[in-house]
Image 1: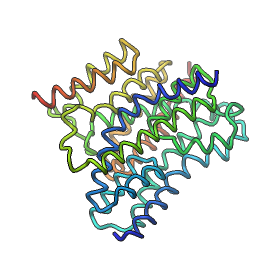
Image 2: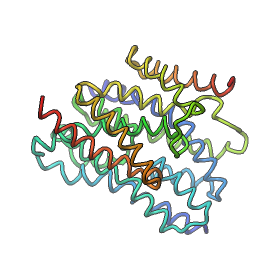
Image 3: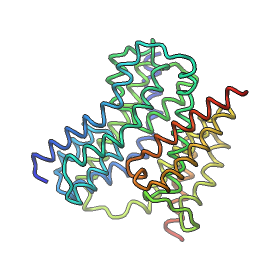
Amino acid sequence: MSETSIWIMIICVSAASLLPRILPVALFSRYEFPSLLKRWLSYVAPAVLGGLTALSILAPDGAINISIHNRFIWVFIPTLLVAIKTKSLFWTLAVGIIIMALLYNFL
Amino acid sequence: MQRYELKQGMLDAIPIILGYLPLGFAFGVLANEVGMSIIQATMMSVLCFTGAGQYIAIGIMQAGGAVFTIVVANLLVNLRYLLFSTSLVPYLQGRVPTAISSLLSYGLTDETYAVAMNRYQEHPPTTSYMAALNLSSHIGWISSTLLGAVLGSFIGNTDSLGLDFALPAMYICLLVFMVKRKSDLFVALSSALFCLVIGYLFPSTMNNLFNIILATIIAASLGVLISERD
C-alpha cells in the first residue's frame, strides 16, 4: 500500500470509527426516551460485558476454543472469585495477570 | 469538586491503560511490519481509537486488501458503538453539555464504556470525569502504539508477562460490578451464550463482532421481558 493510500485509509477508518460513537450522543440528547426504551437500554451494558467476557475467555485468539488447553479458562476461575470477593479492579487485574504469567511460563 | 472528578477519571483509567499497553504496543509493532511509518502508526491511534478495527486494518493490509475493504470492515466492527452511545444518552442528558459529550464520545471504547457505566450507576456524570477517563485512556493507547512502533524490533514476546489477560480480567471485574439485579445476571449470561452460539454458527461474526450486537439486542429484550414479570 502506498504512502498516500495509507493516509487515506487512516482518515476513512477514523470517520468509520468515530461516527457511530458520536452521532447518537449528538442527535438524541435533545429527546427524552420512553421508559420502556430506557429500561431496554439499561440492559445493554450487562449484555455487552457478558458477551465481551465470554469472547475474551472462550475465544482468546478469535476462534472459539473450549478445551482444557485454553489457559484463559483456567485463569478465569480464580479471577472471577477474586472479583466477587474483593470487588476491586486492582486486585482482580493483579491476580489475573500474575496467574496468567505463571501458567504461561511454567506449564 | 471538579478537580476531584478529574482525578477520579484519571484513576479509573489506570486499569484500562494497563490493558491497552500490550495491545497498543503490539499494534505499533505490527503496523511497522506491514509498512506503516512510526508517524502513521501513531497517527492512526490518534485519529482512530478502535483496537479491533486497527488490527483488522493491519490484517487486511498484510493480505494485500484494498482501502475500501478496510473501511467497510471498520464500519461493521464499530456499529456496536451506536448501541453503546445511545445507552449513555439518558445518563448524560442535562449533566454534560451535548456539544462536549459528543466530542468526548470520540473516546468511547468497550473499556471506557464499561467503566463509565459502572460509575454512572451511583455518581452522575460530569464533564471533568468523562474528559479525564476518555482522554487518559486515549493517551495511553497512543503512547503504547508509539512505544511499540519505536521499540518493536527490540522486544520479543509480551505474552510471557501475562498482560494478555489484562482486558479479560477487567471485563470480568466490571461484569461483577454491573450485575446488581437478578435480571442483570440473566441478561449477561444469556448474552454470553448467544454471543458464542452466533459466533459458532456464523464464524464471520467473530471477526466483525456482529455477534456482540445481535446477542446484546436479544439479551436486553429478554431482560425487559423478564423484568416486567417481577
